[in-house]
Image 1 (cartoon, one colour):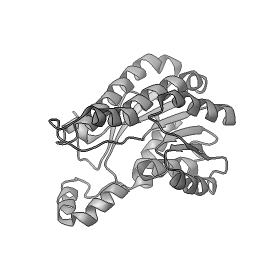
Image 2 (tube, one colour):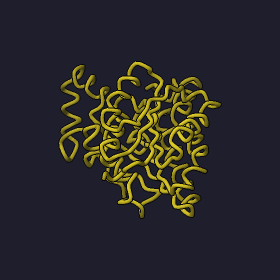
Image 3 (cartoon, one colour):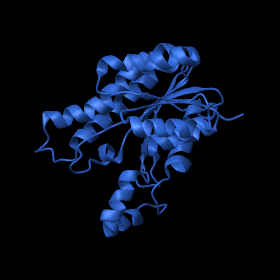
Amino acid sequence: MGKLQDKVAIITGGAGGIGSGMAKAMAKEGAIVAIVDLNEETGVAMEKELQAISPKSMFLQGNLMDRDNLPKIIEDVVAKYGKLDILVNNAHASKQVSIEETTQADLDLSFGTGFYPTFYLMQAALPYLKESKGNIINFSSGAGLEGHATQGAYAAAKEAIRGISRVAAHEWGQFGINVNIISPLANSPGVQAWAKAQPEYYERVKAQIPLGRFGELEEDIGRVAVFLASEDSQYITGQTIMVDGGSIMLR
């Protein structure tokens, strides 16, 4: 029996990167995982990989910027499995540009793929998470915590996600629902591409990480997500968990 045996989890952006790492980690602990992603090709491939571990897992293709479709994601999963235990809001897209050059389209992209889906999926999932006394895992970033240059739209959306997560933790604790935030530093495909393109800069940044490496998608980020979705973390809510090798130490 795994830590998440027969629990039903939705992971947005689950077809690749950190999302795929969490999906595999949860499936290996017995969860039934529904990954939501825009990319059909990678989604179908990840569905097959997950089903080899957890046969009932599935892929749902969806555009998170289609706000009217967000409740249907929750409804489709509950209709198929009869319940929802875990909601992971991981997907987010943004454009790196200075505040001076940031356009409304840049803000719409970041909030439209990050904050708004997180907010509306939480809202739609609430009735089912009340029944299961479930868990929500949202994502923040060092870009927001430290104010990284050229990350204005992304940082704003990430900090908005942190804010609404803390409010939900206060409001929904009475229902036995835990709401927590992961702030990761991971060896994602984007980081790997950056390492190849700018190896010297990459090595300088890595050297500043106290644990000396970027986190692995499944073994590091995924395992923390398993913990936050499991019975082991049921007295933790409203917290930002820094899974970043010690890069940012919150006070």
